[in-house]
Image 1 (cartoon, rainbow, N blue to C red):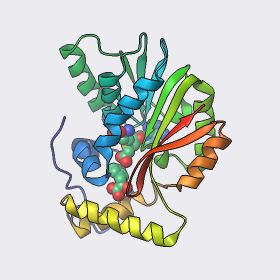
Image 2: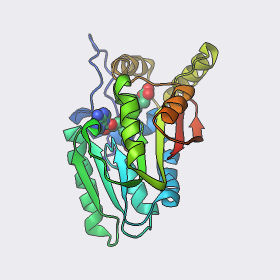
Image 3: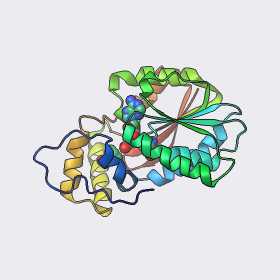
Image 4: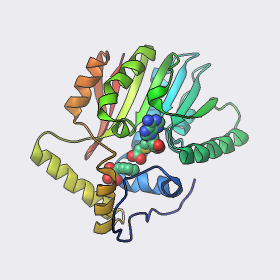
Length: 247
Ligand SMILES: Nc1ncnc2c1ncn2[C@@H]1O[C@H](C[S@+](CC[C@H]([NH3+])C(=O)[O-])CC(=O)[O-])[C@@H](O)[C@H]1O
Ligand SMILES: O=C(O)C(=O)Cc1ccccc1
């Protein structure tokens, strides 16, 4: 994995462009996500542990919005169920190219890894195969809000009995005091990880038009509306959380 540090927003920009998952971001992505998302390493590793409990024989495990394939790699470390394959999907050509390099490197080093297919494409246009695990690890927040319910409905329809959707997201909070406190604490987390106030401010304006977080209540209601029967939060660190949704 690339160890290059994230300095994307370190210099003052006259106009901050909308955030995009381009070559520059791909190069620093492992550093960026670890220093920006509290709990990210814990979520990714344990997503593999959870997935191993829900994986059904001869089914598909989806990693939707796979970026560099961190979740796919956790699935490969933990899932031992017969006949499973991973389908990892991302619509950033730069991400997919690097993701394939990492996964091919693993294939050549280890035998008996779950087979993985990496697809460059829009998850909104995907024809889902019967799946036992679907991971949306910090991806739904980048999908246009009006598309989210229909996407979750299609995921629900593809899920086999005993399977699960694992959904991780940045949260917004309907209570202004709670929202303000957790936003401030997230800024403190980023500062503690070496980001300057300028980097934090410029990143905030880069993501505000492209990343629209929902509240936990909105997630729960939409998942139930999409046909899920139960929504169980299993992790929260500051304003980042992960939920299990059962079919
Ligand atoms: N419509 C779409 N179709 C496919 N991919 C998309 C779409 N929209 C956005 N993406 C992709 O979703 C990913 C979101 S990052 C996921 C981290 C990863 N899951 C991880 O666990 O490391 C989250 C973050 O950076 O905060 C990017 O790679 C986008 O290209
Ligand atoms: O950096 C932030 O403030 C975030 O909310 C998380 C994030 C992480 C990586 C890319 C875009 C957003």
